Image: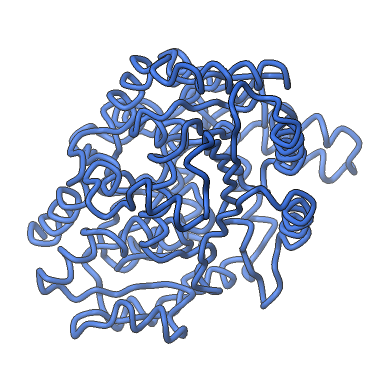
Length: 470
């Protein structure tokens, strides 16, 4: 059973060799997704041994949102006490500080929550008991699907820390299935609290992530397989990526100008994409950089999230379109989103196009993003825009958290905190694209894992072996 709860899960599990290997191996595959009723999605993965079933995470909320919140907050704000975690430390302090004036009953609940967090952070036995208790009281809205197929292996893309993954993992264990967690992103092992459910096997990106899983989440090393980064396979293979001339033709770009590629952050966490974009637009309009430039902007796919037919971030998207009207020389690359049920689900061609843009650009701009790694794969100079704070956490906390700190320590990324620094960094890289290239090589070495170009193949075969071993 492959659990597809959002577009990045689909990219990881379905639009890679992982799905191809499992399908060709003859296993019965159940794709559990909110898009199981969408003809386009179903037909894309239509094979004799593939079955589509409806994933209904909203039913988990129907049981008891208060109990769900308590367990969620306790897990998010807990971390092993002997390991400092500035994300967890900041969020927990902020949460309780914001609740200083709540009612007496809520204060009692907060005392219970603080006590739970204190013990969770200090006792492995209590963490195991905590997971067991939640598992006993968690609902089973997909019980009929488990009874119908009796899956041997249930695959999710988190350690039970992303929304509702832990509940489907708990359902799996109750129904006798093994669980496998493929960690979706480079920061998930240190920014989401402690593990959310009992897991039998984990697939990590790198040896660093392996160590974080073992140290922070009570998972034995023998259960962790370091497979590499599936999302980067196409970048390393470089066989399907468009050439620079194709990218320039597609977006009607000028070969006489340098190309700045700005990858916007998700509107859920950063509300200043438009502010930065206006700054860049005015600079280009005034010809303020050392050489003539053109700007390509790619909105984060979360901009296109839809809930019941309504765009969740339509206001934010409208802001971008207003900028596009005011500065028609900016080229926007709006990713194609193909599903309403699976938010920000995109065809594999979007991966190729993004890789082509990263490779063709002269400078890449982002905000505390894995784009720092992706640009480095192509040795494209990359600038982290430390302008304006994220909505839920200050930038200094972001910068000093383990995954960002590790990347910045290589010297491969220029992080800028004001407009003058941004202009200087862009000019420096445009004049000397080889600047910081050794640092970018270090980023690739430490953050992109093993099996460059074939990690999906390795992970697909690993998953197949786990089924066979049962």
